[in-house]
Image 1 (cartoon, one colour):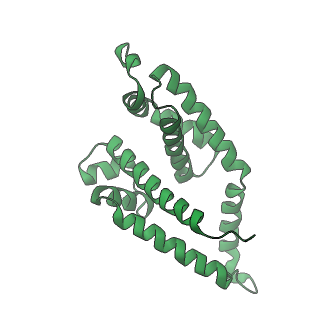
Image 2 (cartoon, helix red, strand yellow):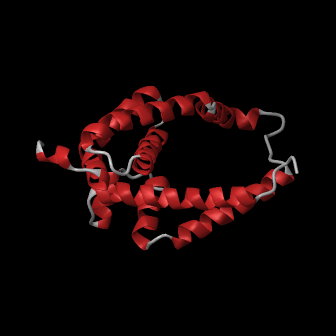
Image 3 (cartoon, one colour):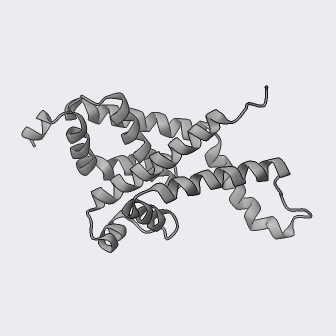
Amino acid sequence: MGESFALRGSAALDEIFRLQYDQLLRFCRIRISHAADAEDLVQDAFLSVRRAYPDKGIDELRPLLFTALRNLTLDYLKSGYARQRRSSAEIGDIGESLACSRSATPETQVIDAQLLAIAETAIAALGDRQREALRLSRFERLTHNEIARRLSVSPRTVRSDITDALAAISKSLARADQRRPSETE
């Protein structure tokens, strides 16, 4: 491992991903209980560190990753998303006994339909392997190892494909959000 410390930039991050992904995932799952969200947060940490520190070496990137992941996890917990997920599940469980179900406003339905169309366009623009890896991960809930076997690639390639696919979709949605007029205008 002595020579791997000489790696810098993308090669260093790839090496850390290979060596530390499982540890980072455990670190995150201890803090949040939702496995899919924990995987997403770990991928987000890698993406943010990759963008912010393109020339750092392994010895500098490892603590940056843990710090980024800790901060993302805290933001996740503070955002109320975890509480919303739990309360949505609880409402879903008792939804049939409620007098009236929760329904979206017409405006929310239009916005949701627009965002869905943007996401579908972004997904259609992905490469075949990225699109399939994303589908198997998110819709069939397969692990990265199961997807890797199915697609005849390495788990690291699967992680990279899913990360890149999510980044592309996120970028498309962010661009659409920037073009949308704000409510204050």
